[in-house]
Image (cartoon, rainbow, N blue to C red; front, side, top):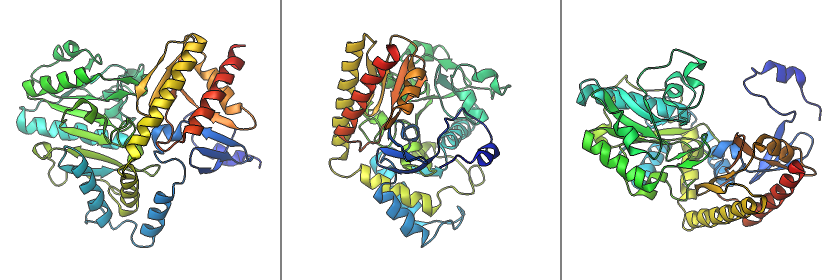
Amino acid sequence: MTIDRAGINALMEITSRPELVFVSGQGSWLQDSAGKQYLDFIQGWAVNCLGHNPAPMIDALSRQSRALINPSPAFYNQPSIDLAKRIVDASCFDRVFFANSGAEANEGAIKLARKWGQLHRKGAYKIITFDHSFHGRTLATMSASGKAGWDTKFAPQVDGFPKADLNDLDSVRALIDDQTVAVMLEPVQGEAGVIPATREFLQGLRALTREQGLLLIVDEVQTGMGRTGRMFAYQHAGIEPDIMTLGKGIGGGVPLSALCAREAVSCFEPGDQGGTYNGNPLMTAVGVAVFDTLAAPGFMESVNERARRLSNGLMALSEKWGMQGERGAGLLRALIMDRDDGPALVAAARDRAPEGLLLNAPRGNLLRFMPALNVSAEEIDTMLAWLDALIKQVRG
């Protein structure tokens, strides 16, 4: 099938895309318009937690689309009620606001913290975030992010986001002043190279924020919904944050995200927050199907088994090729290489024949792996074997 060049030219260019068009997918596999199959270890950047076209999502979309798609967020609908209750019952939070993207959920978290600061901390508005962090692409969430170069890309930035160093409690303490209202972090920094916050740091951060009367916000857009082997990553540390954001995996591939908060922090008033499509029954019905699949007996145990298999396999490759090891949590992992040939490996993997392999290199010396949470042991082994051969190919 020839590529529709006129159609491609009609799209706004926001990234460099390879010359292929995907037309179908099933589980861990994608197929392009030429019929080539690709083993997908990106899955929409950890979005497709159940892989491509999973039956529970298809059934939910079909069933709900015949009943009700969008009555307006000015009214209740049953799927949003059902999903909110599931999240509340599975977490330490009391209230849920549904949105469409992780950035929108994080923007809501920033607004909620600032509203709480107006009410309880004499107008305090600063939210301490972390160097190399990633919270989204709106102006406020870009300002909150610590990604290199983002401070000038669409200057001026939104004020109020001083940057600390991950896993350094003293660096957080040094930034606290009378205008500080919260601390916000990813339990695992994904874009930075899959760098986990330690259990000790998260516990220390919770103690420090309570001592100072500050809110603790966890951005679980990438780590939530089973990605780390627990439903929510904060649960590994045994803490209870005040606010949490979810995205990516919560919809399994459809646009859905959530802002979750404890009752004492849920201070929005009518008119403070909203959105045209937020919490519509079509998306939240899919969210219910995804949640119930993840919460089924044995599912998280399987995620952790696959995570150990992937971790062990990546470590074996690291030792074989003299690399710097691997790190991560659950099925969000990274191979830390000894040279900057990540982009070359990504390209070679995609061009591999007869089947391709989809990988991601957020840093030149690092490969990131975000497979479906129901990826099979055989698919992990296949990826590892192909990657081994690709390293040999690229390195000669």
